[in-house]
Length: 257
Image (cartoon, rainbow, N blue to C red; front, side):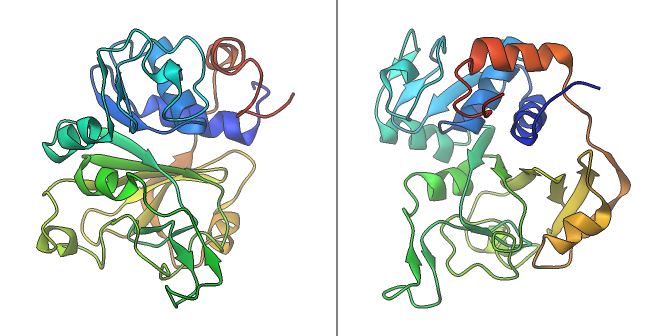
């Protein structure tokens, strides 16, 4: 068994979801590391887009922000946010990665306020940026997050980024493109997807070192469970080598050894 930490496992799992020839809108940190790992392993033709306008850069070094000059290096386009959101709205971006303070059973995400009163919240968060556009128009939305009850809640305090809203059919009824929506939630405990019939969150596999009870106890709503529930595949030695030596040798995101 390879020696790895939970962040490394999450990045590897996310990278494996990205097919060769697909496109993905990413931010910095773990999602960018996952996209870079996919490019360096099984998806050399993966097209990476950054919110600030970089398209298809040669990612020699890990960017530190979506506007970092490295997100434009040898790219096919150096534009602006509108140049990224327009192809999303046209259905040209396959995947995106999002994050937030809260997520509910239908994949709705909150990165705006904690507390019921928008004008006088307990905590005011950064807000959407491009997250609402990504969640609304990219075909498949993926999330990478720590798994705990404060994040996985029955009802988000504010919908910053739409998931399946109130369930099956609600997203389409709201005018969002048919076939788009939440796809995967990758946590330190498990890999989750969504039930086709109800659009509720479903556990697909459990990460090594955790049990079914651990995952449910860390979730603020009742989870569904895949009939094919299994164990998450561990990182290979080669995936870990590339991640540690070529993508994040300073260990800014994967953590210190």
